[in-house]
Length: 207
Image 1: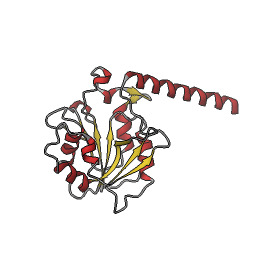
Image 2: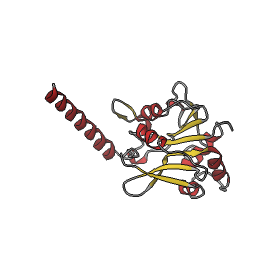
Image 3: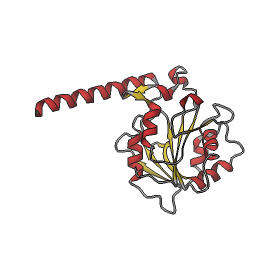
Image 4: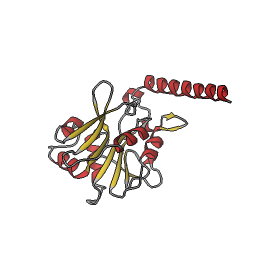
């Protein structure tokens, strides 16, 4: 991704991860690194990068903020992050911390222009569901949608996306898959291991 100081990134990492037994989802390891580090690498060219979550997730060059109250939900997290963005920032990525293919999300949505009649681009998974935490947003429109709510705490993301002009992009590469449960984590690890094994076999066959 080409560096663009007008495009920020917001990474949400402040959930309770109840479906993982309360383990910090951001620190689950896949592909030899923590999930959060893969997501941050995908948006490394952005300025600023704002991570909403606990202080122990601090990384160089990343601003860490916390929604109030803690665990107030994704809309409250977005509200906290937006307070940290200047008016000069036109667009922001919004990504959850549990996306092992975050780089694919950035690649897929970067292929599309944000036209004047669109406030947000987001991937649509194979089940036809739009993924608002795998998206790219106009900051002004996002602020206005959140500001129109009586409260951000506990609000569902559909309250935001329903107020925006959203263009959904088919996720043909499965980039928006997330790891909500240990079953998801195990299946992803097994898939990656099988892929590495197949690549080794192909290399031996062509050597």
